[in-house]
Image (cartoon, rainbow, N blue to C red; front, side, top):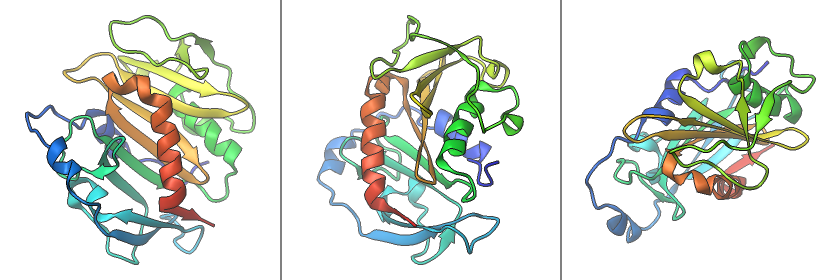
Length: 237
């Protein structure tokens, strides 16, 4: 199983954060240079001696300005950045900013198990007990028409008759699966500003990207760009 789960409080924050604000911040932020990077380590909270990931992230990218001390070790990180500019938005002035939660997967699990656990979290009635050594049986269809924006292209599919519906109420759940699950996308069906949570794995780094549902047409570009960025920001052994 995965030792380092994404904390439920943080996941709720990714879905619910971003109350609309009438602030004209984008033009101001565009003129602000990127801050100096902070280098520290991400590690298994149950065994900090194993499988550290070295992170080097601009200080202004950390949500609410909560910046870890240089050289320290932590179990996770939470960033807020304007996209596609990648300008930090720690004060939450950009309503369309990406909220990026990162945590370390179990170093004993291979990429196959990490990927299958992502799917289990959005498609199983009991993710912790779902076997990770074989594919899950799920019902898929093309994204169904909705009054809200829906994802399209690149083979994205929607889960129907979802066994996880009881703990994902009022959510649309989309997945991209090739040989293994590549990304899961969970989006609100209601709310003042419906949000989406897009999750995928990069090596042993588990990433959860939150953004308003009206940006869902960019889901693939967001995933591709975040992976490209973290290939530089995160050095994995």
